[in-house]
Amino acid sequence: MRRRKLNNLIYIVYALIALYIINEILSRYSLHLSVSESVDLVYLWVNGSDPNRIKKYHLAKNITGVNYSDTNYYRRYVEKNELLLSLRTVYQFISWINKIYIVTNDQYPFWLNLSHPKISIISHSQLYGEGKTSFSSNSIQFTLNKIPNLANKFILADDDFFWTKPIDKSYYFTKNKLKFRILRFKGDVYDMYGPDATCTDDDDNIMVFHKSIIEAWNLVKSKRNKTKNPRFGYSHVAIPLSKEIFEEIFQEYNISHMKDIQFRKCGMVQFQSLFLYHAYATGRLVKTHRDYYTTFRGECSEQVNYLLKHKSKGASYCFNNCMAQYFQQLIDFYPPCEYELKL
Image (cartoon, rainbow, N blue to C red; front, side, top):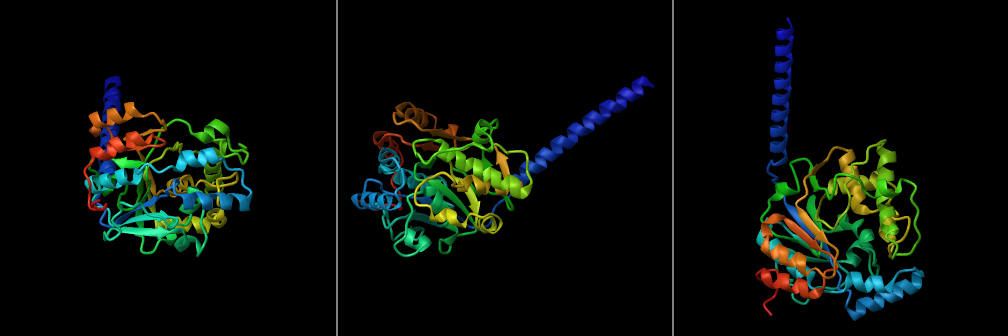
């Protein structure tokens, strides 16, 4: 009798293991179903070294009276031709991109091939109205659904983000869901500071940024009655988005005023976090493994040398704040493409 019970238990265990394996296979298959829709790519770009841009920045800062660090502005927005590097890797590794939209305040890189059929410059006036702009990338992101002819599925990337090996659409999308590659599995700013974290309007205080992420989760948690934080973490990374979910967010949350904030300040809601939290809470986002690398070091020779030696280690990289000489080293490594002029 005991032997029979033991055999039955073993059969049940084997059956459960088999069901788990089958479920994993089906799940992985469903995550790699081909995506037939067009996918666009959107960049936010600014030449912070442009004297006209600097003049507009100081004028807006004086009018608003905002406490925004000039040192931080010059550090974050100095031009290092990051977009040139990124577009060379787009052409080489994700050429299936349908259209490339570059959102900017009446600027464009001198080397950009504006006549290329895939390239479109989107001015702030097209998103905000004539003569209006913002110096907050987060605010600008709340306007992206206004880009004319933008595909339903699109990828949002910073200009310091670039790809290092071929990937297809299923890297970012399934037929019905978005795929987000998380930075870490354990903990994020919500765990570090809690739901009632406070900040001041001092942009040098990273809490301004962290608080905006916390506010994003607070909104979704309250609206969707969620208690378990998915703990995405945060990093500079290309993010899959959809206009359908984008417009749904505007209907569900009181966030329309976020687009009108000109400088980063307390009380903002971090757009990317809000989008990802909402998509996850409504069952339209899948967390998957990380295979990108990020560094925030100015002196990044070690990271550049590692990348050039081990290109296949990750699908993409972000070298935020990396010194110009190292970006040039990477630009020289990847061949010129038809997105740039022959100078």
